[in-house]
Image (cartoon, rainbow, N blue to C red; front, side, top):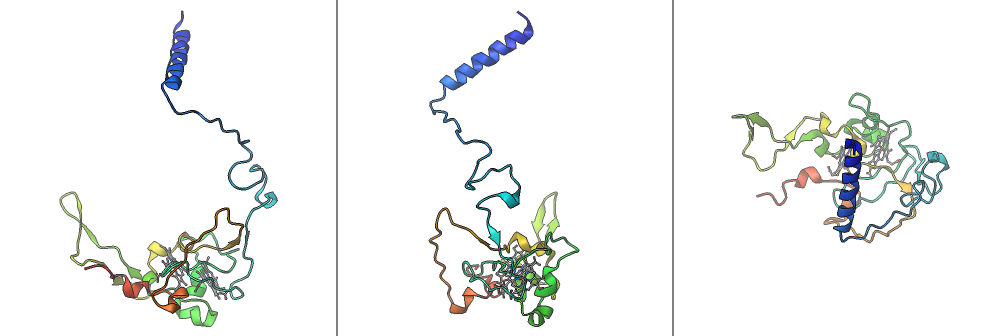
Length: 197
Ligand code: HEC
Ligand code: HEC
């Protein structure tokens, strides 16, 4: 018997042993591979042809209605269309042209909050081959004097557009705000030290 046949026989034997030693029943996936997930459509079709694909808001900025915050100090959702505004790069960011505090009133948008112009990362210094936190403060909160913290340049990492969808599972979460106006504004930079001794 040549080496090839011996290996095939061993693999087959191992296969039989591994199946029989496993108590869990292997349920065959009966889904057709072109129909996966919750969308009742052929996944190989173009996006535009997919039935049940969500439709995103097509209201241009300035014509949409703000959405209530999902919970206190949650990143607000983007109520307007972002067509032509993404992708966001380190050097090209149209969001800031309307949301920087100095232009927000004129643009009738919402000003980016103080937290986006603050560095919360403690400074680290290289010690004996390890990094040490060079501060004894519980929370680092260093104002960047109005300069955007570039850890936040990618707005859509946290702020997302809204789409009309039929929820497969209804969300029953009810937000509770400690002050009634916190359903449509942020105050994270004022209370970030809350609970820190
Ligand atoms: C041309 C100006 C303009 C641009 C560009 C723009 N926005 Fe807006 N944005 C607005 C205005 C105005 C509103 C208020 C709602 C409205 O009037 O449509 C708003 C609302 C929002 C809100 C909701 C704020 C709240 O208080 O609930 C978020 C979040 C937001 N925009 C994020 C973004 C992001 C992220 C981008 C970039 C992808 C962006 N915006 C680009 C003008 C703009
Ligand atoms: C790492 C997540 C993150 C990123 C990235 C981020 N944000 Fe936010 N944003 C938040 C959170 C959380 C809040 C609400 C709490 C707070 O910080 O005050 C917020 C609040 C806001 C608000 C509402 C302010 C108010 O007073 O109600 C605006 C407008 C906003 N962000 C715009 C932006 C824009 C524009 C960018 C991109 C330059 C951006 N954000 C990037 C997390 C983020």
